[in-house]
Image 1 (cartoon, rainbow over the protein chains, first blue to last red):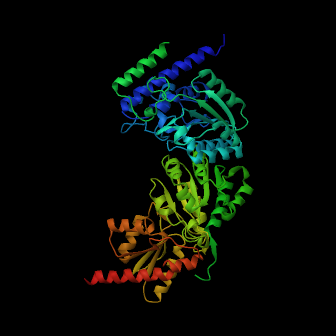
Image 2 (image 1 turned 30 degrees about the vertical axis):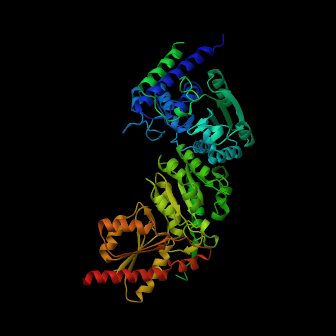
Image 3 (image 1 turned 90 degrees about the horizontal axis):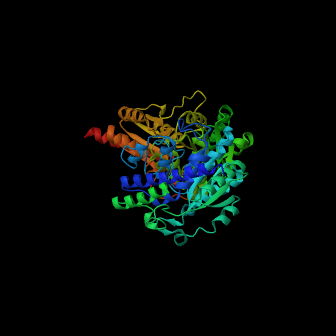
Amino acid sequence: MDTDTPALRDLERMAATIRCDIIRMIHRAGAGHPGGALSAADLVTALYFRVMRLDPRNPSWPARDRFILSKGHACPVLYAALARRGYFALSELETLRRLGSRLQGHPDMLKTPGIDMTAGSLGQGLSAGLGMALAARVKGLDIHVYVLVGDGEVQEGQVWEAAMAATKWQTANLVALLDCNRLQNDGEVASIMPVEPLAAKWQAFGWEVREIDGHNMREIVETLEDVRDHAVRPTAILAHTIKGCGVSFMENVPGWHGRAPNDEEAERALCELRRQLDG
Amino acid sequence: MADMPTYPTRYAYAEAVQELAAANPDVVLLNADVAKSMRTNEFAERFPEREFNFGIAEQNMMAAAAGMATVGLIPFVSTYAVFASMRACEQVRTMICYPRLNVKIAASHGGLTPGQDGVTHQGLEDMALMRSLAGMTVIQPADATSTRKAVWAAAAHPGPVYLRLTRDPVPVLYDDSLQFEIGRAITLRDGEDATIIAIGDMVALAVEAADMLEGEGLEVGVLDMHTLKPLDEAAVVRAARATGAIVTAENHTLFGGLGSAVAEVLGEQCPVPLSRVGLGNTFAESGPYKELLVKYRMSSVDIAAAVRRVVSRKDRVRSR
């Protein structure tokens, strides 16, 4: 038996737990973006509970790995992961988007312990990640920088400015994780503004490209660890995901990009997710 | 003024940031394909591992600087004012100012100084835009000496700083004994009849105007308001109380820059006659810097005329 199997099962259970947190947070806040938070739940779980070097007791540890949620509207997934990892109390998740809360509608590095970069204006996170990767070189720090980018987000030209520059400087410690859920605010990425062929684009910009099932925990972990330990140039991991993953009536429905579930919908979603936890 | 040595403040910046980098290993320099123009290519030769030329991609450069600052570096981002403040405006706002990151933006070609390049390269709205950003410090030194001091002051000041520079040579007004402090105006001369509050390259022109007016029997003070934000409000109010009339002079649009900032302070704290010298509701055009200043009514002659206007208004107020 593979010795990693129990750990993978733990990670899968954690991802399901985080999906429950996401639904509860957005339901309580009455606003937010469940679809893209749910699609990224397995990726974020793998990073925070397995792949990244972190110290929740010392969120500003200089030698920690960095994570940027460039698609910042998905922040409930990150807040849930941070709380579950021990950066702050689980009860604080209830304050999402409330006046005075440390959990803003998009990530704020000054307010929330564990947030490495303020983000949410799409297209800018990869540039910041590149800056971190370069700064690590200047400072002599051995750190890895992970930037979670939406597939619709690459419509922003700045993403490609950053992609070009990362190749110039061969930042092997920079990983772009693309949450390819194929939907954006106004509808399907392919009809709003086609971005394919994504793999060929990243390759043409000089990046190593991996394609994975963004909901297969074994594939996620193996790929992230292999890239972390062996990359010689910047790597784009195209993670094929399902927007709203884990809640049947939210899956692949563009309308769940940016609206909160009502009481009945939240209860149905939590029932489904609890069954996955028990299964 | 005519016999004073002159020097472009962009070159003074490029030299000072090298000295700074020699003293502080956290200082890095970011270029966007105008390193030759700003002479920051000399930094690249001296500190190759601490210089990053991003090519013609200012938005990426600005957000990358933000990322660098989170790891403890002090990035000096070097480009032209139009691109720093407008092409990358949102990156400056959301990625640098909002998280209060320690990024210094050196913006050359401020105002009409890139005269012959024309409107595309003349940064005339940058100070208003940068002033509107919460937590941003906005500086335009008057000469090469104060530029060198401003570079060190900016590095010592935690948080974002916008440092505006000139393409063209401007008179060297100060010697090395200058005490430069962010947010504290420099009194170049005292006066009784009016005070000219000027910023950047307009400070030398303000001194010229005050010289002209002296011949007409007017004693005019000159303040070098090198820091637009935070504005030295106390100095503005002191000048208004002491002389009862204010003229502002800026190489910038009249909408939102020094004139606006001074008017806000005067309106709230000490209303006196005010006249603002700067670019009106128009774009300029190609032409030599000094000829443009004349055509667009921003020369020392125009500053002197503005002083005469506020002095006569002051007299009318008194005689009522």
